[in-house]
Length: 330
Ligand SMILES: Cc1cc2nc3c(=O)[nH]c(=O)nc-3n(C[C@H](O)[C@H](O)[C@H](O)COP(=O)(O)O)c2cc1C
Image: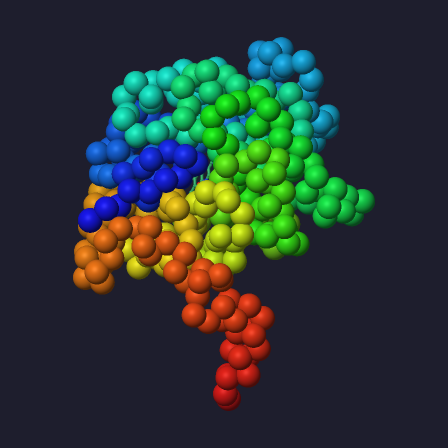
């Protein structure tokens, strides 16, 4: 059974990649993930705020990012709260590269154009096989239009592309007005891959203490459906690698992801909850299912239920919404 797949031009032994998370922070957990079958490792992100607030890092760049006021800064973690500082991050790339045989993808996380993106170059020099650029932003400015916001994102992508030769993927949120068009432009800006999607950590409201409370829950398979829809829509429209991130917990989830069009499946919550051993079951069940259904390789399955290949493309579109609502009986 051939599980090999190509992601960002990297030949991977299977589609199961460890997504950006604390799994990469220490060598033991990273090594365990590799031993249990992970085919690549995306590192925990290095954040724009770390680079623009760290005086050593700022000194490395000629321009800095947007001004932040003191109140806004107080919401950010102290530099000691980050698992790795900018310099340590680079050393850690080199350490991971020396201990692992799977590709190591560094992760840069930010939302505005600025000197911080220069760090991509250092990541490449430290040995990263690719860079995942996580564009995590929450638009709150009523003066900024959707197209201005997209232009800003495209500038960040083009900026990173200009700095490095290694592949660059872009991790997005689902909240853009036309993902197919935006994806095409992200590709034109130089990205080699797309990661669908960021998971938004939505703050809850404490109605007694009148506070906004940060909340982080690990995912369940229910998060998969949003990814499947957009994976299926984007597959085949732009020649860009596609990674699914969010809600992969079982072999069936993984098979659906591939059939929708994913080249790889990034897994985080599953391994944070159950340890890297969970990858054994996931990969074994995935392989067994393929054997039982006479698939000879992953390529044969990929995209067979995408919008362009599905026997019922309307089920992915508006028609399905109409049908579902009309079928509900009281
Ligand atoms: C504890 C934790 C830390 C994470 N850190 C990052 C990060 O540094 N950068 C990033 O792009 N995504 C980060 N993520 C998001 C994951 O990479 C992934 O997109 C998300 O958890 C959805 O995948 P899952 O359903 O397999 O958990 C983190 C997730 C968790 C739970």
